[in-house]
Image 1 (cartoon, rainbow, N blue to C red):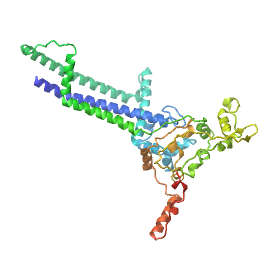
Image 2: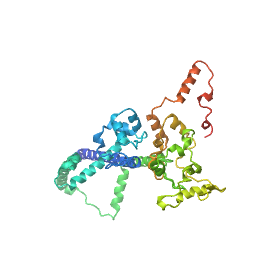
Image 3: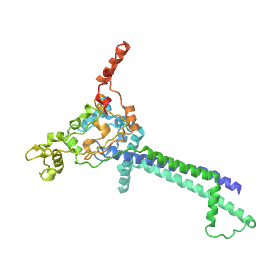
Image 4: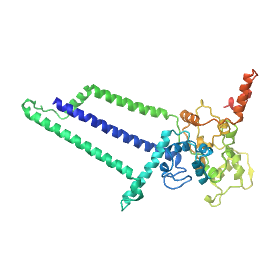
Length: 426
């Protein structure tokens, strides 16, 4: 009996290990594609489709058309690749002159590879569907899915062979056990009748006495609870995708996209202060004293424009303002903790960061939502990938201050920007 147990143990361990490894690999690959699909729908689907053109080009076949290293650079910072004079980037920019590829410095290389894996999986799905519907069994769809089919066939054969080997070994073990039982029949004690359910209690007691099994179960429970707790704590305070209901249904897609109004026309503070600022109703009236109707409402006064008039106590018939004004109570979307300092002008003017880098493609948003995570890790990832633009007055001023310090001359805080209001007044 001991020899039989040893044989079975030697066979069972490698078989179990192979099955666990196969399951882990397949689960990992599925997770990559699943994560890629999530990232694609959240960040890429506004401009791209896997099959068919949208604002940007069709992505089907991009893994074959472009080198992976080039795709990583392009998705990380497309404007930088275009500015470097890359011929492929310049050709793409010329093909789509009205839309520039958004930079995604917050993506890691693994995340970009996950997105590309998702695109490839969608191609494979379509190719497999085409192969199922084809009558001749050949053609483009069959070629595109041949690698996948070969892999599945090889894997199926391997599983069948493995199962066959296991069955042979088990049959041999069973025959050996039957011979041992037959030859020692008189030595085997007869089972004593027990009450229903008593066997299960005894089995649980035996399992509880197995220290290795108990240790493994406790370890798995600790790992599961630790992972769940870590994921929950990591996402505390992260409001990615937050889209509150606003008092006026202002469409960024209509104003910034269709009418191509520059972001700084309304958010002028982004160029000169810490805050981008919310435009006052008077800024809206620069256009809406004349633009009052909409085709959507059969030429009648738009109810959303009427809300602006009520806030300003404005009469469109007499074109006069009344005394009963009240502010429009916009709901803030992008919130940073009080201990985090962010200066819009420093990023927009000095670093030359585009609004879409943090706020996403607002020109395509009917309702604005929080596009980025706005976490410390997200900011650090961006800072690690963004090159410093030294060609600006701030660094020239800083160099001049260092030269004065070397000469022993007096340098005041004002020379280093100490008179900026945002230094003290948040």
